[in-house]
Length: 141
Image 1 (cartoon, one colour):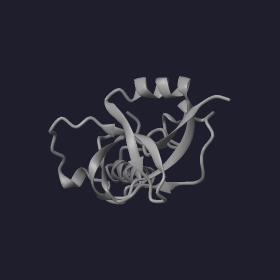
Image 2 (cartoon, rainbow, N blue to C red; image 1 turned 30 degrees about the vertical axis):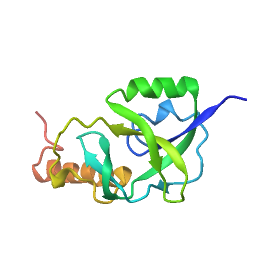
Image 3 (tube, rainbow, N blue to C red; image 1 turned 135 degrees about the horizontal axis):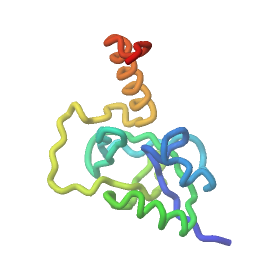
Image 4 (tube, helix red, strand yellow; image 1 turned 180 degrees about the horizontal axis):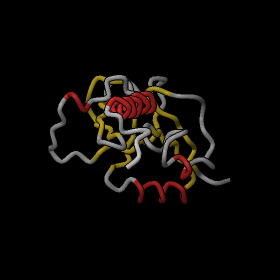
């Protein structure tokens, strides 16, 4: 039997987002899970960053990841540290935390809901609405 590590994914590795194909083959453990409310999720543009401190519960999915896939994820997430995360139900998984180098994030970059999937969908919708408002769709250049 292959040994696995439970990895909590909260951003682009979640189902339906850009990097999910890297873990699609791994068994998902349950539905959407929440972390304890002791973290912060920040908007880094096309993807989020998880900070080690805060007051927010982070929404994510837990996958049983084999060592080959874990090595691939570590390479993909090389700007992040894989560390333990405490989940609301008391279990511990591994998650990729942003490597903090003393950077300061304005509160406008915080994902208050802790749910990147919902936040990112709203962000994309707002962007599309701005494009429509500016008349940039349906015009020929």
